[in-house]
Length: 385
Length: 129
Ligand SMILES: [Zn+2]
Image (cartoon, rainbow over all chains, first blue to last red; front, top):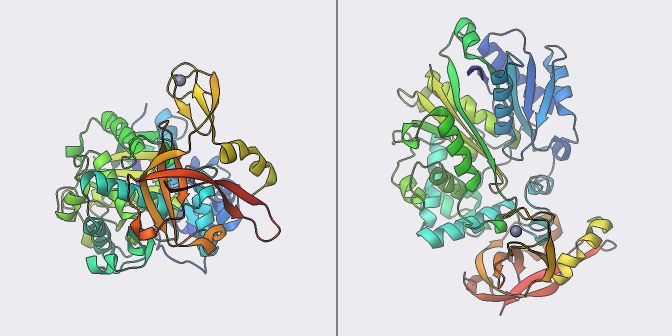
């Protein structure tokens, strides 16, 4: 297996991009990655996208986007794993470069979610849950995560305020990210007095609906050392696992088995332990998710995620800053793009290009991207050479 | 809801038909073709009991389009006597008096309908026992 490097990372502003089409949103970020890498050709392309069919009525995305990217008729494949589509695309690109099949691979992620109504978006997102035995009965994604939150609060005594701390921290970080959809700082009071969506989760516990894209350029480390003018970022670990699609089929409702197993694989490949990770971008689709994820990644013991967040362990300046980009919560969550954007943030951080939210002397970072209520998870670990 | 799908799912929704692995005894709802615990492929058809307890729950305040008329409504995960868990609405209850651990039973109820002339879908909802 060849060693794989990230030599380009690109992301344009996320938000309600009414004036831009899906294809232009993708090409804008892809060109930023290509220019960042300084390459003039790519050998192949993977696109993470959850549901362009339901959001904009467009399938056959890989062909469309390759056409508009204008770099020739390269092989291109769309990868779907619900909200983990981006992470799955990163892994597909990693495997293709590692295998020797291609040298320069573009990994993109895209979702255009705001062309449909709120109802339309709820319907499209709900397809990531079990249609026949969850969605049929009227549950929503906030509802599924709310039931995980109730289970976590009962089992470990996690508090309403601790959930709010996740949102406050991530909006604070996002306020320093010019690409964030919602860069506003918020307070604990704002969160716990916002509109109830699914008890105990309120609107400020939920990530927003977003239009956006992100892109990376991958190549073998040997080639990167020759052509890359910036610090070379190496992907040292890649882990992927699945779990039951239905939340109710799991033994323990507040544990993310897929994340734990994906992390174990990534740590093993990278020869790293949780203590070696200096910063992480994780899937905070809801505040409770970040708490369960930092436990599954082994950053804290099971049940201590809420307390650790409240104590500032995961804040900028804390022991392991989590979601320096603002996370899904503040930066936005165009579902297929999220897993790619997480790697963009870690690459910028490890190169020292993260501006006001820079983590000093960061050398090893991790990303965790998750589909549905945890039915799929991808974990990647990156190190700067 | 397409009518083939509605028809196909009736044994589970109306009668709670499940499959019990003939080798290890694990029960699956809905039935499946291979046991995820021991990989055996022979099952016995059983009907689940309608009694269980509430493991976790929430109150949906913002609902999907087929359920907007019903908000706010409670949803929970119920563990049935056989150890099988199902996700279901909790009905005939006071929303602010719900708590985990309460005993519930599953009843046959209307779940959703496709407008005035569309299919009416029935299934199970739980009520405090
Ligand atoms: Zn079995």
